[in-house]
Image (tube, rainbow, N blue to C red; front, side, top):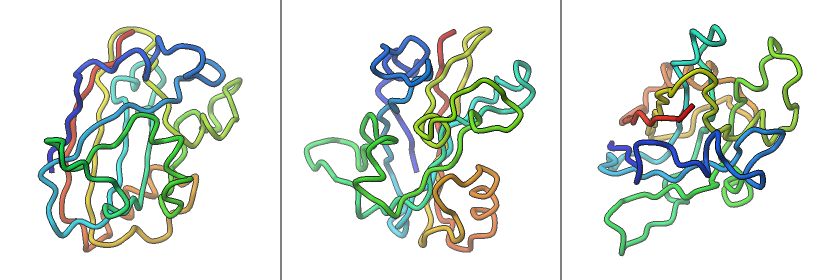
Length: 185
């Protein structure tokens, strides 16, 4: 599986410099587009995490910006005029539930009980949170997995460790890929 995007630096519309209409409580909430190519033909479901390992020195843990599970490959639109096999469109995080209700999204680090004074809006705590590095440019990692069946036991608002555990215990994990993208400070 090959993961790619039309950029290596996450555009302002999806990150810290997003316009107010792309934010809730100051948090960017419009997810960026990306591509999935060279997918193993036996993959039927996709799952991903978008995380910031560079946040560890800043807040003490890796920040989870977005996690999604049980996205049926067959539910995605193929554009036969495009050179990419699967295109995940911009703002997918906010639209996927209406389009593909069996797909679930996990909590972001904004939902952590250790953080006070942050938004409790589910659009922030259980959907994409754009990069907002406070100290310097950060490298963010988008990791996508492909399985033959949906991951069992995951509901809307799952925690990232639950998805990672389900992936470790899944005999149907057949493919994975990832990409590092930069978020500007």
